[in-house]
Picture 1 (cartoon, rainbow, N blue to C red):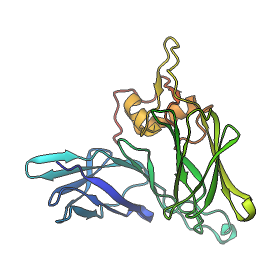
Picture 2 (cartoon, rainbow, N blue to C red):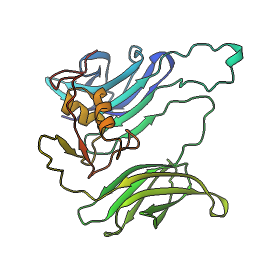
Picture 3 (tube, one colour):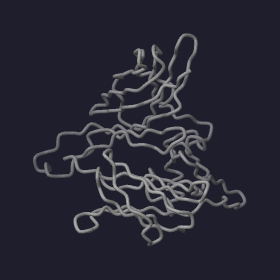
Picture 4 (cartoon, helix red, strand yellow):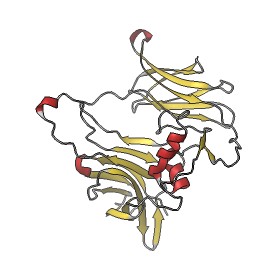
Length: 286
């Protein structure tokens, strides 16, 4: 059958949400919280489109998934969405009214089965600001070429460096996405992207380490994993420790090569330490 998928996830203050997507026309779509708790159900229309306004989602980190039923056939969605709902913001006293505002909306990240994670909703704090430049993926293609992609303010002029050398320029599209291809043999080191302002002045930058994929270290007794395209720390933790929130264990053990836990890259070799807090047989149930 046709697997149901997410298109839109919007989670507001208090955990109220509007979630939309596609499935087989006429299929009954169920929205699940952490794989087992149903929080919404609706039937897809003739075009396969559906919208669910589920029961409010409690503060915390949760994984949303989909299951569609058409007749006697049941099809699980291949993608998941991780949402992090903040605690309700309390009214601040007048004396602290100028303090930085706490995030008032949730974070929502789509985790496709065979593609890099995609941000669906970012937390807002105070006034909305233009999106910053970011590197979303650095992938080595079979022929040796590199594909470097990320996000930036729409229309931003960007310059990309690898190992201290300029390897290309790009312009963010209307949705704020950019991508460049780098020829084989470009080397290794820090990948840096700079957003250029008037006169070529650098107004923002982001960087991540890169080294070509290599075989994992065969240290006796050490568990390691080679990061593959489309995976992330949440998925690795769920497979290794039985719970996505245990990604913190992997992050802490590999801080020398992971600057941002939301951004890991194909070819990185990560150590998987023994996690006493969450046995591999445990679940993510709350």
